[in-house]
Amino acid sequence: MRQLPGHLDLADVAASESVAEFATRRIETVAAVHGRTLLTPVHIAAPGVAYVVLDSGDAEHDTFVTLVRRPDIHDVIPEFDHWRVLAVGDPVPPNEIALA
Image 1 (cartoon, rainbow, N blue to C red):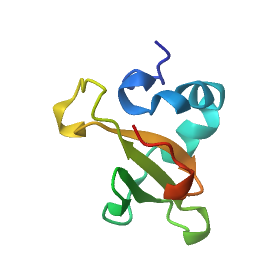
Image 2 (image 1 turned 135 degrees about the vertical axis):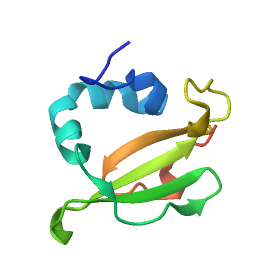
Image 3 (image 1 turned 135 degrees about the horizontal axis):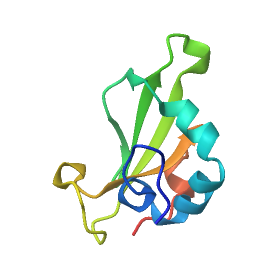
Image 4 (image 1 turned 120 degrees about the vertical axis):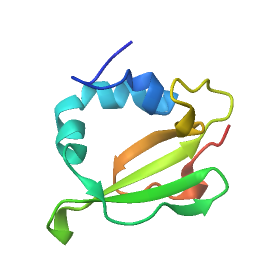
């Protein structure tokens, strides 16, 4: 499967519908998340949808990560509890997400 350098396979961290986009935008995606720390606790926006904000050191460049819970997907790392990254950038509204 496609892999980010020095990281897990994309399929182990990304929602299946996002894998191709993350692979295509690999450099941009890595730049948006590399070396960043959580700025906010996880915010549950709706059942199966959550957001985190990664700190860039400059509020204008903080990165939103939209997470979705996919219980049907096997976890390579049990602590992930079936959560996968759907989007990096602007938050995706829950009503625009097809939940499994």
